[in-house]
Image (tube, rainbow, N blue to C red; front, side, top):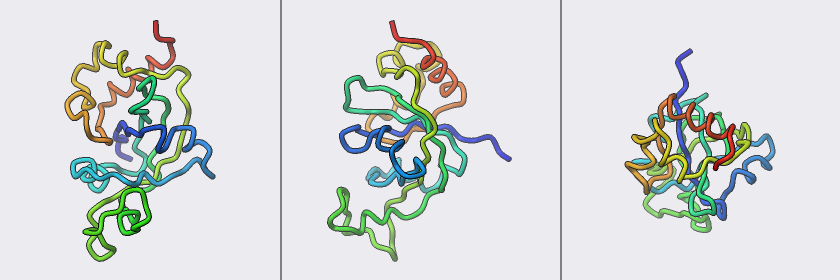
Length: 159
């Protein structure tokens, strides 16, 4: 079996939080509503079954990685784009010609200590993190080394 990929998924907790994920039946949810082409391409082409996810709260206090999840279903058409009553409709997308894609994730665990953006910025080994190169997208590939560093930081309280 191939080594899993590693990702950082961003969500505003006012829209969908890690607590929301963990309260879902089976702790599983669709990662829908992504309306950025680069992030869509990652979800459609690169995020695979079994990949690991850092769940990141953006536009929050504090902005931080707060939990982990696992991909339990690979990319498939985001049908919320076809629903005019959804939070992210796109009339150009249709079942016959889907534009947007989503994956399903299952929550694994809340981190013992959130890892803040400030801490990520100041930690050696995370200088090249995709989070800093493409700050506007909600799906970021990360390396296994970055994953390990962030999980290690979560074991210690921030000073």
